[in-house]
Image 1 (spheres, helix red, strand yellow):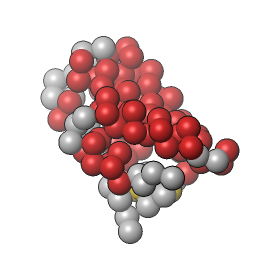
Image 2 (cartoon, helix red, strand yellow):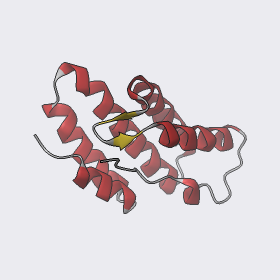
Image 3 (cartoon, one colour):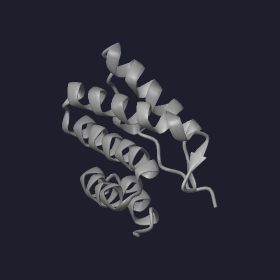
Image 4 (cartoon, rainbow, N blue to C red):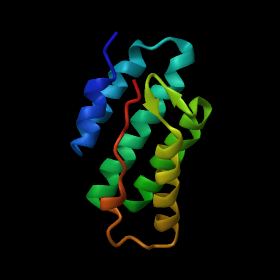
Length: 115
């Protein structure tokens, strides 16, 4: 099984497409109980990719789906802090819903590993 650390690095380097691919590989290898967690990370990564590409509807849809999956794993899972992460993405969704998109790319949080 691949380690989540590389996906976290890719995401935090704003390489959201590569992070999506990495988390998708983890999702494919995961057991049934973990699949939802990795799918949530895939969707968050895709949402961020859409966000930086200007596809705001795609960003909103994917981030919402990702949050809904990750909520089942708070406060942390696989050493990834989720409570603060979800809160920050909920703020981004509020901004997207209110069309308040100035500086929204700068609001994309980093993934924090807690070891």
